[in-house]
Length: 403
Image 1 (cartoon, rainbow, N blue to C red):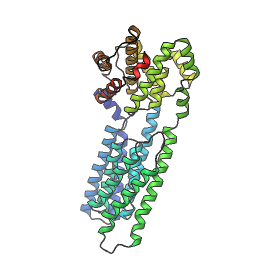
Image 2 (cartoon, helix red, strand yellow):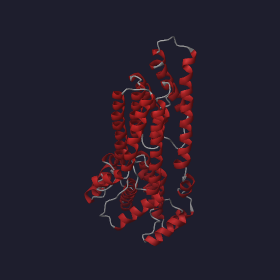
Image 3 (spheres, one colour):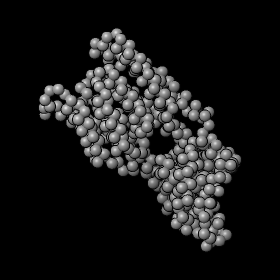
Image 4 (cartoon, rainbow, N blue to C red):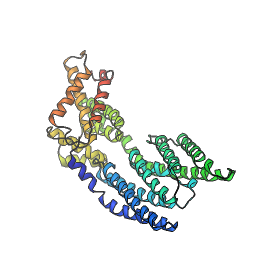
């Protein structure tokens, strides 16, 4: 539910990438065609198509690469990492044109690009680069089909990464798919009689691909997934010193924090947000000072990350002025979770045995948010709002804990 102005602002930061990527890709791909001895007409064809492919890749990244405003520092670092991966994938795709087509290690390109961005973006970019390799090598549509299907299937079985990295079963399924596709689509179409050595290259292809994917997963986990896991595990401990202090000073606020964090965790997981950050915001929003200087000191003492600070700052600004629109999806989840929890608790304070119609209560809360313009400039979508409402309405048994 963002305005177009914010979408434009998001995409302009990646303009420079296209100006470098497109001509470089066109130069390399056309140069490969020259190396293979293609005639002038074919070289012109390669130059034109490579420019189209490079431009499409650039536009795709500018339009669909998600830049989070929750933590600008991490977002910029992630963007740089992804663009480096795109350049490496582009160089490899050109280099593959000089290899036998059974040795194109394209499956890791699909998986790694999807890992560092999103499955949609990774698959589209990989397919475009694969098309360029097919053009310069002169291979037919069957080879394109083999690697497209194997790559998409591998993205599906490997991603998304969970809290524990699953590798064995996805690796087996991915390798099996690639081997079957290569044998049926490439090896069996060779005019000469199939011999044992023809199967060596696909096996080597699978082995190299799995090594690359495993290395990428390990690097991604250490750089991104588990970077702050110990810190968030400590902060989200309900027996932590700060939360126990809140429990003794103000039991009601403690219960609000506890239940808000529960819904933050559930909804963040459903919306594919960082559950640790959003849940942590649910626990500590009641403890966050309204004064800016005191708030910064509190953040420093608690060693909060930039992402967590951003959410709590946005929440505090909204509490001071409820008429403004939220910006991030994470803050929207926090505000909605707390509001529903407080609404349910207010009903039970009046009548402990009340039978709450969770559907009507949830609809009323969100209708009020929409009328106030709370989501007008927010990253949240109508689909996200529907998912939140669904979760709040389904938690009928949990609300008994709020009595």
